Amino acid sequence: MPSDAEITFADHAARLYARRYGMPPMAGRLLGYLMVCDPPEQTIAELAESLLASRSAIAGAVKVLDSTFCMIRRSRAAGERMDRVQVDLTSIGAMGFDVTEYQEQRELAREGLELLEDAPPERRAVLLEYAAFMDYLVGRLPELKKDWMAHREALRAAGELPGAEPSP
Image (cartoon, rainbow, N blue to C red):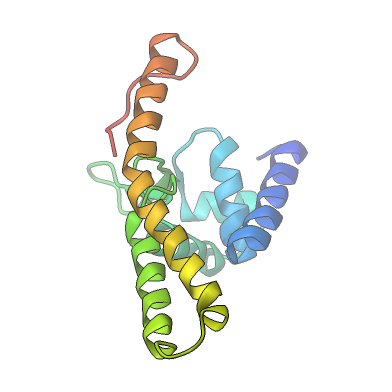
């Protein structure tokens, strides 16, 4: 069974991720718990028992973390009939490096600018700056990802982070 401190941490994660990212509270709670649980891979049943939640609530949270936020990995050992889930920081979405998110926002800003094509610059100002910022992020994210990966490898080499995982 998880300790009170582990459950408190999971609850704090739930509030943070709900407030900052609009994540359903159970998904944030599950993510927080997966960050501190032992072993790091847990079945739906184990998670439901630990978090005092229904299996369907946990399954729904797993789906959100898997398909929407790309922050977990499912695995199944040979002969097992159930998935195990764990935090997965190897996807570009999990670490915030998914450039398509910002490309879509840039395209939306450009659509708005087309709509306001004949409007005075003051009316277009918000969309102009928004599109420029999205252009900036689209251009910078690949470099930030490269910088992070080099920094992560340096931390691993220094023994400050554990061994290598598959690179995103």
